[in-house]
Length: 141
Image 1 (cartoon, rainbow, N blue to C red):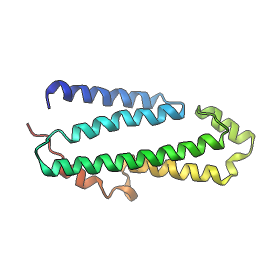
Image 2: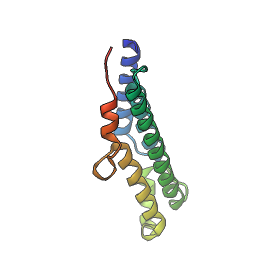
Image 3: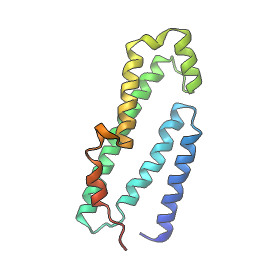
C-alpha cells in the first residue's frame, strides 16, 4: 500500500468521524460510521500476502457487514414507528406527542440499534471477534 493510499484512508476516516459528530438524522448516523468502517477494513488488509492478515480482514468485514445490517434494521423500525421521520428531534417529538414510546416497536428498534452499534464498537458482550482481528493485522512494509 502506497503512502498516498494510506493517508487517503486516514483522511476519509477522519472526515467520517467529523460527520458523525454533527449527525442529527438517521441517514447521517448510518453513513458516517460506514465511511470510517470501510476505510478501517481497507487499512486492516494492507498486507495482502499474509494469510493471518487476510483472515483477520475477512472477519472484520463480515462482522462489520452484519452489524451494519442489524443497525439498518433498527433504523427501519424507528423510521416506521415514527411515521416516516428521519431527523432525531422530529422522531423524539413525534413519539412523545403520540405516546408511541410505550410501543413494542420502539423497544425492538432500540434493541437492534444497540446491538448494531455494539458490534460496530465491540464493547464487552460483543467483543469476541476483536482480538483475533487485531492480532492478524500487521502494519509492516
